Image (cartoon, rainbow, N blue to C red; front, side):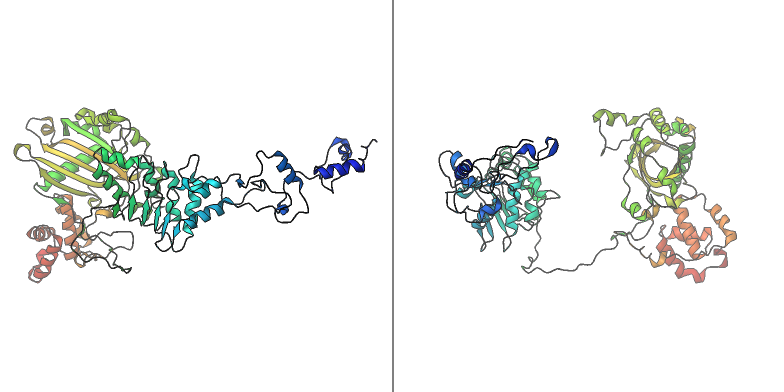
Length: 594
């Protein structure tokens, strides 16, 4: 085996004296390190400064200082060079380089960027007024000396702004007023962390910056970064504000700002006009007032409302319309006016009430999972709130004429409305509209239907505008007293019909509210053998009236004739009828009861 010759003592001494090798470094035969020609990691020291060198006192000029002095151009410099100066956190081992250390002197410990920012913030802080002045940061000599880029400077980023705001959040007492004026801030993204670190900020100046669009303001007024306690904001000298004023939209600019910052009372050094009442002003002492929480709406849900028209007109139309719509839609052609309009819209959102009650995930309603909105959405839904595709789709989803209406209905899933058997599942309101010869009838209906073949339940709202069928018209000849001028159908995710059950309406989810004493449920006074006879006797009445008759007969035991008389004499007011019955029941003969 061959080995490298051992260097002479004179050569080793010369290299050490020149500072090119250390006293403990030995020359080695790199080829003999490992068999097979593999070389192990050399243990010779590099020219990198060791961390310990920054703290111990060297006996003479080190190799790093000699190389730095040999390669430095223009002599020694006292400048601090920090790689990634704007980065806050643990610096990399090679991130700090000391330049121009004189031989024979201790190495200076480089100052981290965060310490420079901290000294800058403390220097600009006035704790007595709780005011942090961060104006004209690019002109600050210390930041220039250390090469730091404040927000608004070319090539600056959100990181520098976050450092400043985080350091500001450590100040005590808490910052109340902040000025970022004259910093050439051109993007609201630089302010995106302001509300996170200074959420209680009351006064903010962004005067003479370069904010141009409303999106820049949204970074401090949006849902995730909102300054909820801001009382004064200054945007003078920003293109956004100046353009709004020049284009005559000053009032809109103020209202938009007030809408974004609901606590704002001063904008651009002018008070914001607010509507106030002549009442004592709030106390300066914060007092948490415990207010009662409303559990129900101030007005109760009332029964179906039909006025200005005979109930039989409404009931006869609906009782005939829905069976044909369910089983034979083509037979409805004569019920629609030749120039009638029809449209339907779909709302796929599950109502909050249904979501809380679990109606779409309940084991008692397994078919709800089988429902699919695809056929409805592709069939021409005219939900203008969610419609895309421009004016053509809006026009094409409004079907004009009886034939177009029936054709559109025929493409939709089959339905089953239980209008005869379960009147409590429907709510009907009807009243006349127009005058004289232009008198029409408006009917709005809320209810539910079963969709086939899935057998799932959907809720719906349907609004009709009806007109009397002229003598000799196809509608009149086919037994329709009225004909349809307009039919608007809204299909919704299922929600229980309890929503329109007469009585108190709960504000939010919770235990059922107690029913009024007069409408409290009790055991029925109708004998079992008289139930069918009673239903037959009131079959000619409309759905809302049948429900009221059944209710009063169950509560009082009156037969159909006396129950109807009691309701009619009290204007079909159930509560009044029950009170009247209590007053006169002692004088009634046995013939009045079932």
